[in-house]
Image (cartoon, rainbow, N blue to C red; front, side):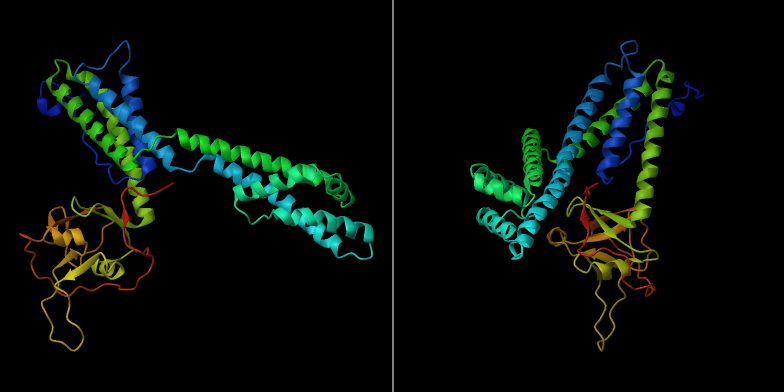
Length: 377
């Protein structure tokens, strides 16, 4: 138990930076922190007056982020549409195959004539499994409208043994059409939410809650009443930070943040130094100064990693740093650390020996870094 007569022993909630966390971890972390607050502060034990509005702010931001997350994910109807379309395609292909097979059977003139008659209308609309959903819907529906109005067509289909198959095919088409309409209606109701902005609002609200709960704990006459809620919120922080660290280790991605060029992830392989990363992403980074070309006089050994982003150049140049120290080319890439781009001016790294390292290009992702936040799950 803390000694609440000593201000240094009053529990405080650290602020955890979650801006670079994947979307699912980001929203789940905020959601579980809200659950802790809701369990702590009830009608019988309301939140302190100074804290309550910031809890509301967090709830509003987290709800908006959830809506944005759902908007960015695939509709549940999409999978259902694909399944029904697959079922419909099997039937469409069966009709095509039956018609084609009997058209060639001169030894069975009755069926051959039925196939030729049936095919004369089918070829007007040409339903085919390779069509896009809506086009196949339209082809089947328009064909069926004419088919129903022709007794000769229906008799031909019966002769070919297609009556029940056609009924199933039309029913599946109606289901596909209905599901597409439901998906369109769902998408029309969704708000046009910028998920990045929604995440930023949640981060700001979480910072406010952290600041205020720490302030009221320090100034309250009974700071011990905040001990449990802060401990539980810390537990959630630790849980999701561990999940984030595990994801980073599994994905082997290094994070480089910048207020100038934006935040990016870069795929790396085990044992890489920054020389390897520069070689992998020559459009994003370079050694400074550049090493001399073969046959030329050697130049000064490269001492830092500079960004080649146009915005970095406009800002006067940026280089990679870690915990305020300029990164050297031979330094290992630490995927568990967040790197930062800092201005070149004022950075005076000491010369470093020519680094050694494995320069093979294994395991990285092509096409440069990935802008935070990532995409999905």
